[in-house]
Image (tube, rainbow, N blue to C red; front, top):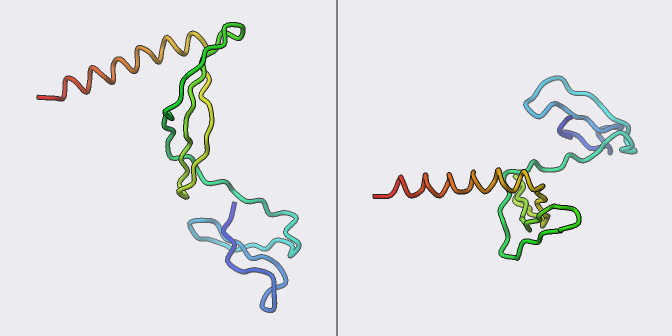
Length: 105
């Protein structure tokens, strides 16, 4: 993975790249065939204010969520739970509520 530091053009016949934190540069063909964009990393996911659904046949629940990226972008998605995951999350969410209550005067 690298950061493009020079584009092909009058000064360079190839792309010039270097590691994100610095280091030795390397080049890639000017046609860009070996370059692929790196998607922004996910920072967090939040529930959206839409109803959840449960699929009896698949025995799965689904919660609409919004995925947040480090570049400020967002995308809508769905968080899918098996029955076991739903039960585990219920306990974890209840624990968060208890911790919140314990922290209040």
